[in-house]
Image 1: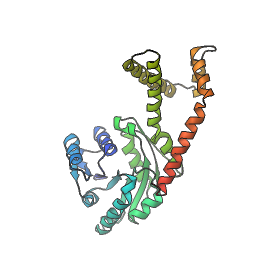
Image 2: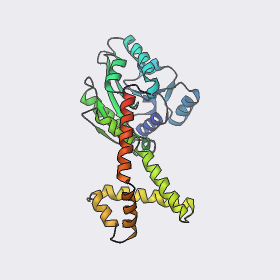
Image 3: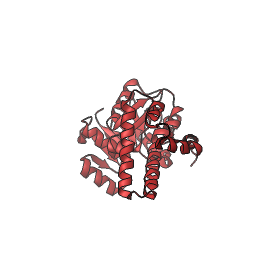
Image 4: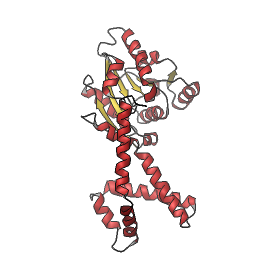
Length: 279
């Protein structure tokens, strides 16, 4: 792609642009971002040296591929504007359509393709917040009009800020939203709960938070690098009659796994509602 455009210059757009520049996928001069907020445009221009504008039509004219990084609540209005701008492009420049990569939570491929028109090639992506520190996890599905090359291009974008996978069936994206999209908040909640409990047992708060975070990071690394599954790793830590076994028994008594399952189900259902336009 000659140039990559972003409609919306929020935190996720900034993280993606930063990762792409840092990994030399795009040069700053090859990226253009539109945003309604002047302060946001100034920040992006200053920190990333990218072109910025308040005119979405300018992004349409300049970019070969466009990342839709706007809130689900306003995406219909944005798509109406973009579809009109796309229709006005010269036939030669729009003969193969234009690639749109949407990160708007819950907005389905059917809704995106209907809103953007026949000239649009569409990929729907669910990223997550750790992309802002280079450790994101994204899943994507391409619409029928998008090509394998489009998909490979989108994977390259999101792998610049972590990891990314392509799925065949869009219905899985609601569960992906619940797992990896909302998942960082669950980890923050668990880390806070562990630290709060440690403070109640007499450990200073700063130390409790430090230890909780390092424990989570170390456990994640060991689980990822080990050839053993989660159940085996749990057994390796939980010596019979020991402290870990006592803690795990309380988790089971209070239905920890059921609580997690219910929470992910609730998030999945909410993603489905967003896809149907229920706000």
